[in-house]
Image 1 (cartoon, rainbow, N blue to C red):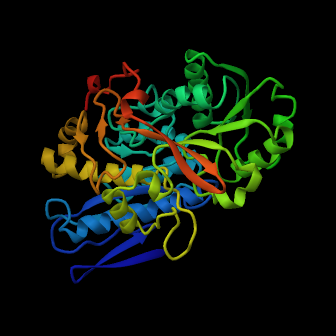
Image 2 (cartoon, helix red, strand yellow):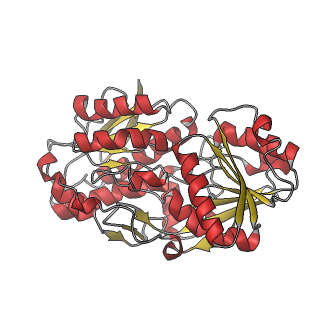
Image 3 (cartoon, rainbow, N blue to C red):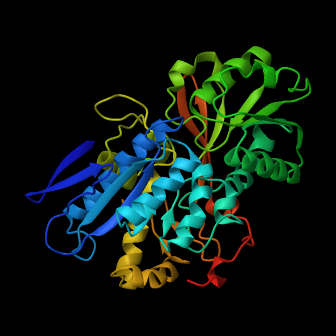
Length: 413
């Protein structure tokens, strides 16, 4: 069992990962929060950084006296990057550990598996995964998609893609919910802007050899590839795409290149564009609030973890940090004391807005009432001479689609 000790105002906050929770100071009943983290499996880099970020958020709030004077206990479970495991661990967090709220997972497949359980157990859930179904037909009133979704990202990135990259495209995505969403939404919006998708390719998650999927599927007239993959899949894709079409331009879906060292990608990475909701390097969002946030989570101006020098998965770490503080605000504003007050809390969060601050370093953010989607801006990054540079900023209004596809406010609580 992994244990983290944090000294807070002369007390010891024990954050225990696994079967025990954090023991807060004082005698007041704690607020119990659960975290599904991909500590192992294909998304392990994401789970590692998300856990570090949420621990830092809990530390900050407990140091300030907790929520309404109540300490926070944090319970962390490993989803193993598998939907079936994530669903079981969600139940464990609620039914065994007694948590009041659950955060993560970064996997859209896990989030979709957990969404109906959140509704069944009447437990607010804040996944930072971006498949559009999470705030659409696969969502419900207990689920708040705490990041931008694929529809926003495709809509926001399509105009830049047509003007700056190309009009004739191929989509290459991993074969599960997040990849399907990217394929469908990018095709829709690139077509609306006057472009065309010539071919769509789906590749199983964890594929080491992408050549059989790319050979013969990249038409000679294609100008660019829109890809949705990450981690080891991204590295295999980049290597094999360069072997097949070294001249073709590339645009990655949100967080496709998270935790990658652009200098080590070499010629296979040079010139690549990627949509992101949060710049990797401080210079891309050089504000006091962003500096403070990075200091609190231990990330340097280049996007590396202080102490290890490894690239942090920053593209979605803000989507763990910000919903935590949105939840805190909702608890305080609604007067939530326990599960019987959860309906009041949910109604308070529906339509709530926040101004940019250290708690909301990514920028102004609203939670749209009908579909519980985070409304905020986006960025386009490009690898130039081995460094990630922000080359465009997309205002939230340009990425927001209307009307919402669902209205959860009509569901009973």
